[in-house]
Amino acid sequence: MPFDPVIVVGGGLAGCECALQLAKRGVPVKLFEMRPHTNSPAHRTDGLAELVCSNSLKATRIDSAAGLLKEELARMGSELLQCANAASVPAGGALAVDRETFSSLVEEKVGNEELIELVREEVTAIPTGRAVIAAGPLCSPALSEAVMKLVGGSSLSFFDAAAPIVDAESLDRSVLFRQSRYGEAEVGDYLNAPFTKEEYEAFIDALVAADRVVLKDFEHGGLFQACQPAEEVARTGRDALRFGAMKPVGLTDPRTGRRPWAALQLRAENREGTAYNLVGFQTNLTFGEQKRVFHMVPGLQNAEFFRYGVMHRNTFVDAPHVLDSTFAVPGTQVRLAGQITGTEGYTEAIASGLLAALNTYAELIGAAPVALPKTGALGALVAYATDPATEDYQPMHVNFGLVPPLEDGVRRGKRDRYRAYADRALADFDAYLATRDELFPMKGASR
Image 1 (cartoon, helix red, strand yellow):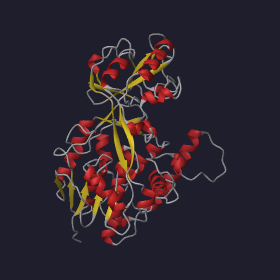
Image 2 (cartoon, helix red, strand yellow; image 1 turned 90 degrees about the vertical axis):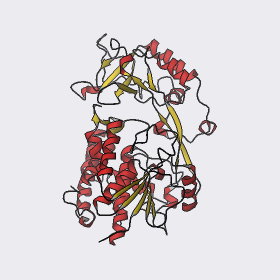
Image 3 (cartoon, rainbow, N blue to C red; image 1 turned 30 degrees about the vertical axis):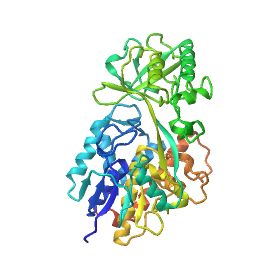
Image 4 (cartoon, helix red, strand yellow; image 1 turned 120 degrees about the vertical axis):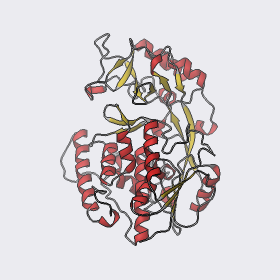
């Protein structure tokens, strides 16, 4: 069956996944990416699927919501998840990638797909015909305004933050030690900067007192909880970071044979291990203050910065009240995907792009829309994000707080409960996919 081209706006995670999934099903796609002609506040390259805030796609354990989502994506044949696995770097129990390799793999897939036409220009108005707007939370002001007019709502926003990246050659390896928490890997995937109590308290004092970039709206809220700058976390309590991003549990400093008072972890940015990011240290400090304060970290006294931490505004729509259950704008042929819907996170963006493709394809062939089980990671997230009863809608990662409780009456510890969630989710997920073979005409794509 010949199809008219579908317009996909945005060459990020959601847009690329959507375009590739449609093309696999025989649907021609015009994929628009505004870079390099028009840049965003956070991107640094013109590569497709550039990761701007972190290189981690989070946990891989099946008994975590993030790991469950990856398993669901794998069972649906996600193209970008394959790229992420191929570009992975050691990160303990998480899937972290070499950013440049990941982007190049995605670009290669898109370039090799005959049904995808990549157009490098800015889209400033809603396209006519069938379209998926996956421009991300940093879409251009003109397109953002057009989207808000289309959905009939006002622009909502939050502030996102990125952590600094440092040169591996400038790190003091006599102080830093390689180890993953709880022995997750035989060879530690993280470098750890150990703090004594005195060093930690001096660091916290400096972090809290340091000069910040002034963002008036930020001072009044609008900050996504999962991307809180480290200095804002530190303001909530002197030990807040020590029980969060700097928790020393599961670590042993080889110099003392004991657990440090606190530890800042560094994760490799690339396969060569030439660059490391400061895990959990998104920041709104000025560049000069970042250099001064982070040089107080043991082992980072001479650290050279490849990139300082930055904050930028992200925009999303009030999805529960302006989109239907497939993230389509009611009464139109336009569907949204990615973080502009408020589904926050890299893997979530990939998932929303895949889901947008499936629902668009379902429309084209006259099939029922996708209705994933709410017991699963993606199904629960979509249910939350499109529930009109949701008030004060804010960006959300997948998490087990969104899934319905177990009904067998068995009392379980946290880990066993999460495993039971995952087992139930995958059983329901497989049963549902088995009823939707029309959406997976490619051999082996759905399993």
